[in-house]
Image (tube, rainbow, N blue to C red; front, side, top):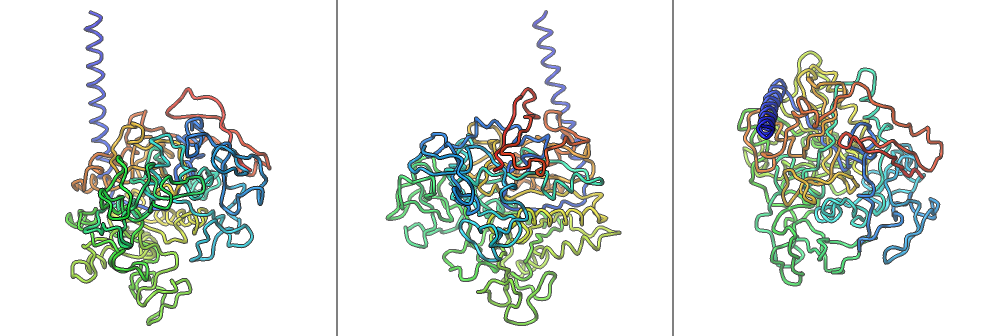
Length: 615
């Protein structure tokens, strides 16, 4: 009798769960159908812990199990401290030595123990550490000799390196696999960020943080922009595979690494090659065999230039990706009769759209804007910080400017960010947004480490959100703010597919967790933390589900869409009317460490403290 009751209880629970799940799916679809517009703001190069790890009530730095993520050197031993190469972070100058590391082949001195550390006390937003536009100093700009903005040096963020850094979900080789070494463990004081301040204002819009949102792919911006619009890694048709200078296949060592770094010495020495394509499955003459278990083929995974203008001036035809033919979310929307646009900062100048919104180069040659690339050729007049590989649709045959179809697609769907801002300002009484809009800020405003200020980019983001919220579109628009990839920075949460972590994944990702905000009418509270698992392809899945489109591929068919912010089980989200206070940076007054009580939405029994080094 007891067994029968138990079996009936389990059956009823399963039935109730299934019914609840079906009801939730139906309810999420109903919320999506109420939306008339989806706006995606695609920022640059920060991990979740790096920017949002101290937001409070999220699975952030306060909940991290540091014993799990302490960084190890090439042989797997724990570092005693973190080496730094940014000119503002080295020891014994300009920072004092606090430890010496002799755990690896080369002894070094450091100001930083082996743990996450806070960037702001050492390089605040006011610090004059940003380079002049177009300059790319390898190890940053010494404080006092640059422009204000609190810039750091850049960090490597490429396909094979990130796989090595993740170390099958251990998250403990970000430092060893980086050209920036210990900078990978730096995090920002979240409550000081302009976006945090805006969303904690008296009349802030309702918003959700998705704290289990992962970059769609391993590596950098090029591949993740492709994942955003096509959910797949692009293939290079007819890729050269002869070992010559035009053979762009990477060559990796037995650890899967294609390069040498301050704390990584490749056993293959200089034979490794860090190039645009995955390693060849059958390398050409003079190249080492590709180790087993390494993704190989003709996939474009690192930065490469398109065939069509705009592309980096001087790029040879042999190093331009042939036009892609696979379908994109743009193709799907066009076939359904749904209007859309990719609004990119600096597009009109780069594309040569003379007189269009955003154009600033006069009416005749030569290019006259003071920030134009020195080798630009009229009428293509790109800004020094215009990023060609951030324009994913320009890689597709459907946008070939020499064809009637391509011209029409470019004119209708590839536009300057200035045009979106104009639409927002003119939408005071009637919404003028297209049903789907992608916004890509120009380099100066996209928050990319090395050449852009995270703080100034944050202010630009807040300006965009304010413009949308002030428009007549706010009442039926979902705004998704996320980052293309991790920028080489540590995060403590393993992505799906790493170390047996379940969830949709393939040979290309997803990669490290990135920040994600959703602003939308219909949210269940002023502040929702969405713990449901997502990746970049969840954005196109959301668009597909809203406009009744078929999936582009396997990944967007498998992932959960962003309607989880509206209706979810208690395990998937938490609703907050108030946020608990987090210590302000001004309250630290020169202390060497600041403690936070550890609190986890996923681990309610977690106790203890987290100490962050502040310098």
